[in-house]
Image (cartoon, rainbow, N blue to C red; front, side, top):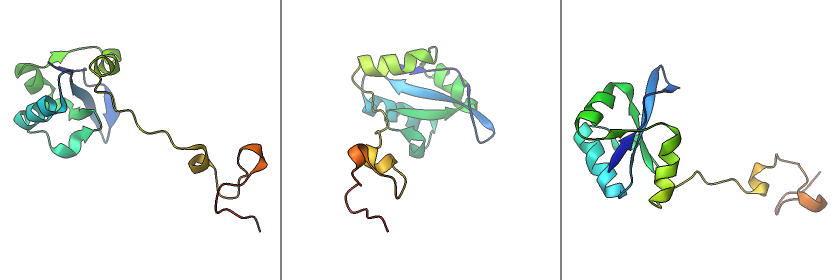
Length: 110
């Protein structure tokens, strides 16, 4: 089944929804193609859908859900792909000493 939340996320002067599937990414991509949504709108586990396509998505069969349900449904379907967390070394600023007073590999002071 396909779901989307109401357009509420502002970005680049527009409001956006999140379009998801609780079945498969193949179902999600096929539905997005029917909507005319470009593949670049796919972000790991959902499509960012502009408010202008919201009514068409509902007309084609997507179910409107509260925004808080998007991640819950993706997790329940084992389709959630969260953003990768940066490692502790990657988060350090150049010249910062790592945990335990040790510099990250390849970093030297002075």
